[in-house]
Length: 465
Ligand SMILES: Cc1ncc(COP(=O)(O)O)c(C=O)c1O
Ligand SMILES: N[C@@H](Cc1ccc(O)cc1)C(=O)O
Image (cartoon, rainbow, N blue to C red):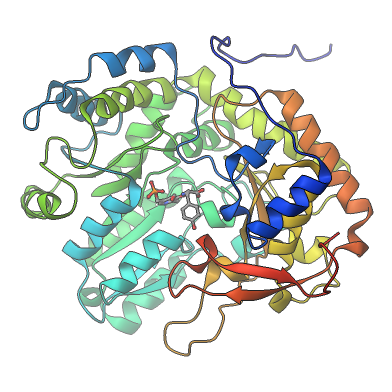
C-alpha cells in the first residue's frame, strides 16, 4: 500500500509577499554585492536560503509571549521562564542568556582557554574557531575522516574519532585541553548528526582525563531526531527524552537560539559546574548585560522559552527534517552532486563535483552561489575555501576538502512548492554548468572574510553564467 502522506503540523496565519526581480536586475544586484550573496539586499532575493539562523517563523504562542515579556533590568520574570525551559528540556543546572550563540562562545572561550591550549572538535565552525583562536587556542579537528568525503553514506557522519582524540591527548597532554567542543549537528559537514553512543564514549574518555565536554547545541533537536530515526533502541523514545540523555554526556553547552529554539535572536551558555557559573556571571556583565537578561530583551527571552518547548515537539521536528530531505531527494534523483546523506538544516551542493573546470582558488562554490542567484533569485551561501579563511601560522589559504554551496532551509517558513522551484533551478543550472566561470577576490577582510569579501568574474564582460 502507498505510504500515507503527512503535512505541515501548523497552518499559516500571516503571510509575507515575495518579490522577484528580472534577470537584468539580478545581474545588477549581484554586481553591487561584489558577487557575495551575504552582501545582497533581502529585497533583491526571491527565496532566501542563506541561513536557517534567526529566520524561523514564530508561532502565535511566541508572538503572544512577546507581549508578556518583562523588561525589568534585573530579575525579569521572562528570564526565569527561559531558565526553567533550559533546565527542563536540556537538563543543565546553570544558564546565562547571551545575545546570540557567539556571545556564549566568547564567554566560554575566555573562561576556559589559555594561550597554547588545544580545543578538539568535530569539524570547525567559523565563529567558534575564531573565539578559540582569539583566546590563544588552537582548534584540532577530530571528526571521523568520512565527514570530509561528501559521498560517504554514514548514519552518524558527525561522530568524533576517538583514536584521533586519544592521540591528541597523548601528544599534547590533557592539561593543554580545556574542553572538547562537540557540535550537534555538524554544520560545516552538511548538518550531519552525532550518535548517542559517540557522545557517551567521548564523555567517558574525557572524564578519565579530567577534560570537560561542551556541546555546541545549536541544532540539537535535529540531532535528536536523527538518533530517534537511526540509532538502535531510540525509535520509541520521545525527542525530549533523547535530548535529556544527549546533554547528560556533557558539562555544558553554548547555544544559538536562532536555530533550534525558533527565535530571531538570542542564545545562552549553560553548565553544571557552580564555580564556572560564578565566573561566567562575572564576565557576562562585561560583554552582554546582567545575568538575568544577558543581551536579550525580556520579550525575546519569553519567545525563546516558548520556542524551546515547541522545537522539542516530535511532530515539528519530523516535518522539519523531512522538508529538507524533500528537496535533497529531488536533487539526488536528478544526479546533482550533494553531500550525502542529507543533513538536518540544509542541502550542500558539492561545488567541486558540480564545477570540475573551476580550480579551488577560483572559488567554485562562491561562483555557483552567484550563478544560482542569477538563475532564479535563490540565495545560498558559500561554504568552502572562502569560509575556511587562512592558516593562522602560515597565512596560506586553508583548502578544505569540502567546497560547497549551502541551501539552508528556514524553519516553518517555506512550503514544498518553494522547494520545487529551488530544485528546478539547481537542476537547470547543472545542465549548463560548463558555462559557469570562476571568480577573483577583490577585497579580503582579515577575520571571518566570507561575510564581507568582494569578488569579480575572472572573465571580464561575463556574469558567471
Ligand atoms: C554550529 C554553529 N555554532 C555557532 C553559531 C553561532 O551562533 P550565532 O549566529 O547565534 O552567533 C552558529 C551560527 O552562527 C552555528 O551554526
Ligand atoms: N550560524 C549561522 C549564521 C552564520 C553563517 C555563517 C557563518 O560562518 C557564521 C554564522 C549559519 O550557519 O547560517
